Figure: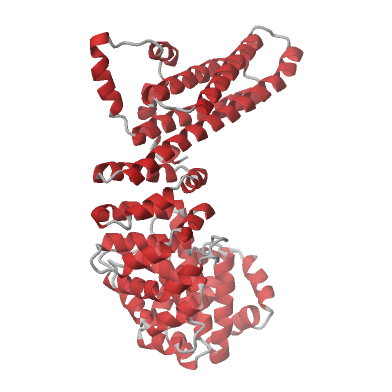
Length: 513
């Protein structure tokens, strides 16, 4: 869950009020505290609970209960019977509190939900009773025979709990979608959109529910109304999150979402933030990591307009984040359809991307350089690409990318650096079929750097994919300049079969270098 990813102390502070004295809280929440004359003010206060507030309340309780259930399973495995019972009592109280809290702010929950609430409460009571019997006996054989019964009850509680939460979240999602569809109030629409976005951060299953309940349709309805223009960035960000699942992309296709995105990208009256978020949706739905994007037939119909707009956005980007989103969309499109590379060449994209890389405030992270070198690698299959690379000083850039290193040590950034090294080597290998590019690479001392990457695992962060790409590039350049290699390098890295050189390099110790 997304909630787990925040700072642990902050998480504890937020949960403290929910986790202390839950037995007392459970009793108190069952008793009305307002007097008859306060009834009207109570109604006013309860009406202020938005669907978004209900969701946050529900998610916090759900996180606590799911955490407790996991801990019970761990203690049960270690036969910590006293702990199992005390934690079961606590879960029982949390479940009662969650149901009471949720029902106090949700007046019209369904009969199906009430049935699940009843089933869960009954099963929690049974769970508490079973674990209580365990602490009243010391006979090990009896305890072991009861263990399987407790485990089955725990699984049933977890199932009922999961079904109830999914039902409640579906109900709240329906409310949010209904608010978007029925309201022309900008504040209500914004609040509902933020609510949907927060749910998309909780995992793929909730994205599927949002898509199923008409969330994509409702969000594109916002994007087609000029009166909600200020909400376009948030709305598009939510759409990008939902489209990480197949159901989201299917719904986008059904409502002509591609055409809407193309209209937004090509409309110069929209803000840069809106264009950037539209680019993020394009990047998401064309991701090469998704296996269900090939049905996007409408994308091909609008591809030229979209690619043109994205190149322009890369050229005019005022921040690194905007450039990253636009270049990521272009990079994915070059995988999505081969015609895109020819379009990019025609649009002088190579020149624009190489110029952007010279601006360290725009291309300021390994992630941005990863997108640029991906585009260069995919475009390098075209013969006309070589002259563009030479004119734009692209060989120098590729050489610099072979030295890409993470400054923070962050695992995601380290992986991005590996991709930059690998793709720059791949691009050099492809472009070096042109003698002019090959000679430029040799003149810039690419061969010594490629040898270093092959022989020193630390230089490539022990990446096998970087090693294979460097061996391929080295062999291509060695054809053009065999004198640039020492005999040992030639004998070990060029002359053998590629697989033999690969095995030799992967078995090298750093001290050997």
